Every structure is written in structure tokens, then in C-alpha cells.
Image (cartoon, rainbow, N blue to C red; front, side):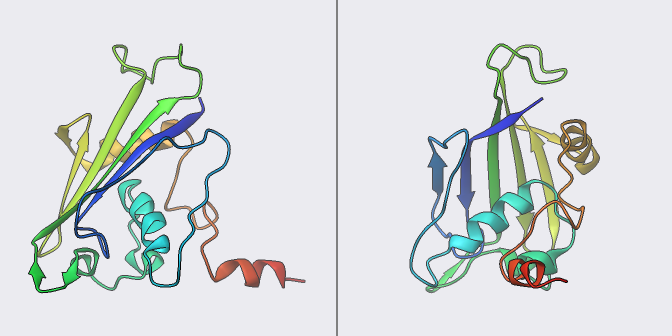
Amino acid sequence: MVLMIQEIEILGFKSYLNKTILKDMDPIFNSITGINGSGKSNILDAICFVLGLSNLLIIRAHKPDDLIFHGKGKNINQAEVRITLRSKNEKQQLLDFKTTEWISVSRQIILGGKNRYFLNNKNVQPSKILNFFYSVNININNPHFLVRQGHIIRVTQMN
């Protein structure tokens, strides 16, 4: 099964204090552009976060609270990322979700390090999210799943 990102919603995550929605994604290729410090890498970090990434160092955080927006005199106590996926073949149902051609996955981090996971707005255990992604061959915790910024140079210079 091939899944496509339909929409990404980021709220209070890293540099994104206000709700930011990215939608109308191209089914083949998307790019994120902007000046230095504009939050480009934080969008990819948000995607990794909602996909269940467990090693925070990969998304440049030392502790869970580092993922919650800090600054501009605003104190918030949680961050949330939601990703809506749909099947590339619109007639194909998503696994055991027989009533829908899309699925929404959310992850919240609450100040103090507590995580909450949601599947189609229903609070679920993290294992349910990870099992869903494993069933469609997405394993964000596999070190070879994603080549991050800074690692590309090392890969191209390998003998």
C-alpha cells in the first residue's frame, strides 16, 4: 500500500507557536524552502515526531520539553503534530479502517515529557500507532529510513 501525506498540522512544536497547516501536497515530490532559521528542518522534525520517532537527538532535542515552543514571551505547555494520510489508490481502503480512505495520526507532548497518541482522533497506545506504520512499511526508528541534513555529505563522501 502506498500512502501519501494529505495534510500536516503543527501547533506549538519547536519554532511553530501558532497552528500551521501544510496541505495540497504533491503526490510525487515536495520541497521546503526558506531563509536560514525559518523552520524548514522543524517541519521534517515534526513529521518524524508524529511517525513515532523515539531518539530525540535525531530531531535536535535533548529532552521532550525541547520540542515545545519557547520564546517570544509565550509560555505554552504542550505541542501537537497531526498528519493526515490517504491511500494513493483512492479506491483502496486503509487496512482495517473500512469506512475511510484517509487516516489521521496525532502525537502530543505535554510539558514534563508525557506523550499522547491519537488515531483518527481516538486516544490510543503508542504501539497501535507504530504497528500501523510498520504494517505499511514505515519504520521511522530504522536508522536507514531517513537521511537527515548533515548526513548527506557523509554518505556522498563514503568510499
